[in-house]
Image (cartoon, rainbow, N blue to C red; front, top):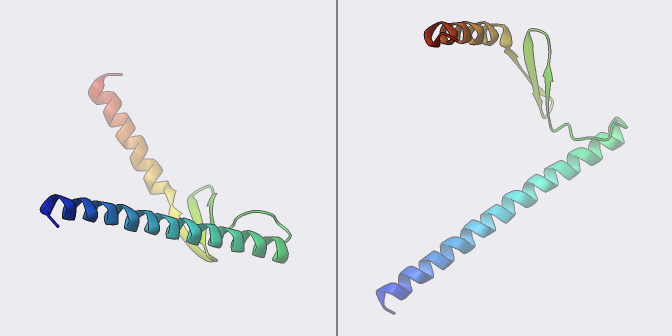
Length: 94
């Protein structure tokens, strides 16, 4: 087998491995979503996906993933975004 055939065979194998990995992650994600949807329908009667949910409160953003809550305080982010916006307006005279 010459050099060109080896590299062609490696490219084909790389494509097959990448395709197999993508199909695996797609099926894994579809399985999680289907199980979450079925569990929510049976347990709460609410039809929907709640594997990951994001709720916007007044001063914080609540991210719930698999019943684990993460709260992000948006008060500081909003303040810094306003300060940056005002600085850009002053700098560019808009």
